[in-house]
Image 1 (tube, rainbow, N blue to C red):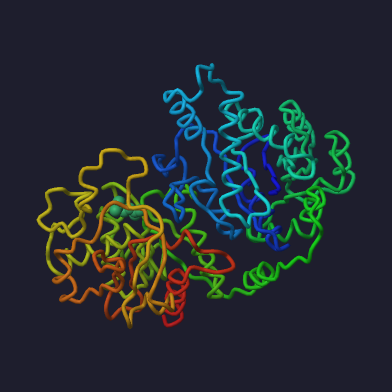
Image 2: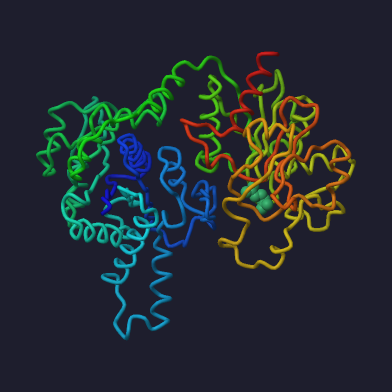
Amino acid sequence: MNKFIFVSGGVCSSLGKGVAASSLGALLEGRGLNVRMVKCDPYINVDAGTMSPYQHGEVYVTDDGAETDLDLGNYARFTSGLLSRTNSITTGQVYDSVIRKEREGRYLGRCVQVIPHITDEIKSRILAASREDPDTDVVIVEIGGTVGDIESIPFLEAARQLIHESGKTNAISVHLTLIPEVAGGELKTKPTQHSVKAMQEQGIQPDVLICRAPVMLDEPTRRKIALFTNMAPDAVFTSYDVDTTIYEIPLIFFEQKLDQVVLKRLGVESRHANLAPWYSMMERFKTRRGKVRIGIVGKYMDLHDSYKSVYEALFHAGLACGVEVELVKIDSSRLEGSDSPENVLGAGGEAEINGILVPGGFGQRGINGMVRAAAWARENKVPYFGICLGMQIMVIDWGRNILGWEDADSTEFNQDTKYPVISLLEEQVDVKNYGGTMRLGKSESVAEGGSRILAAYGEKSISERHRHRYEFSNKYRKEMSESGLLLTAFTPDGSLVECTEWPEHPWGLGVQFHPEFKSKPTAASPLFRDFIAAARDRKQVR
Ligand code: GLN
């Protein structure tokens, strides 16, 4: 039977609940357990696919094509258990299926209510996730929001019931709170006491408390918290602010024996802990030498979370290449006016960057600035990495500036262009619904011999995830490649272009898929790694 750990949060949001849950997952994997991470999101959207990256941050895509909350990206970076559609449960999905069943008459005339029908649906989804991979030992269920939120109540109630039904050693509650510091440097435990009370009002006595605090809590403070919250003092942990990297948090928890306490509570025999990959990753972090500056030329620059996986993957690549990667965020629309790319990006310019990355995106705004940035990188032999939209931008630049097709464009941005070098897939032409209808999820690409993409992956068959509607237009394949643009990876049937590369260039490459989703601190994405290596080498040459 699976064990369950329910992770909830209190006092306020943005305490790092996702990172705490993932770090616990990493520790349990280090103990040889198979961990499955599940996220419950109290919002009414069915999935994150229709939410604006400006407000909600990135949409994380799973192998099976679910468009999910960005917390699943944390799970993927810290743990290695199966991630699929079932790992993400939202209020929208739950109500959607309960209402469908009601319309089908499946409740046999009963009055359909939050308890038990909504909570049963939540429970059955959590149980389905726990059974999907028969090797799963522990399911960590993160409940979004904060205890006390109206929207979270059904999820906490479902957790309460599952804890009750599973028995004490099969399901536990881990609660994350804040210990704020007031003027004079004093740490205050009262909000945490209130937060645990709020949990108790929901019928859940937390078994483990993780306190987010500026510094490590001392023994008297832990004892005081334990006394007021009905906990054992050894079950009160600190997630103190780190100035290194979030990837040190598993080790910080390990030193406090979080995994031992959790295993004991779950009645799992203690086993050898292997955290070697995490320790060697931290070693690489501490021995990085020098910096490379990477210009991210995109459109969702104000919110860091909008390109979360891309930024994390750059950090991982820095670890792999022994350099610190400094992010220079450039709103592409700035490059459309009188600011020339050279002034903004070039040597002596305001950013002096060593490489350019154009990430994914939707809609017309800022596109011409991206094309100018790509042209500048191509002409000045600056390493360039285009992801999804970033590859499409490479193709538009080639059409406009090498083939002289002035209005070359994607039909996403200009329906009337004479040269639709990027256009809609046949099957997408009649799509009217926006939710979940793009080319989504894992598929295979095959790399050509002698290409940079093959050098990066080291094998011809590449499996990465997609999230887009538009494609390289096959009717321009001949002219594009005869004029020198290298088309270096295709779908297995050869029908779609998956990678473009610049000839006679240190490293200019675009892919139609999203390699950032599979990058880990302990195993950087090969393309990110080679891009950062190229940026580092170029900086050294200069
Ligand atoms: N807007 C482009 C498309 O739909 C690119 C999408 C992306 O970058 N994820 O094809």
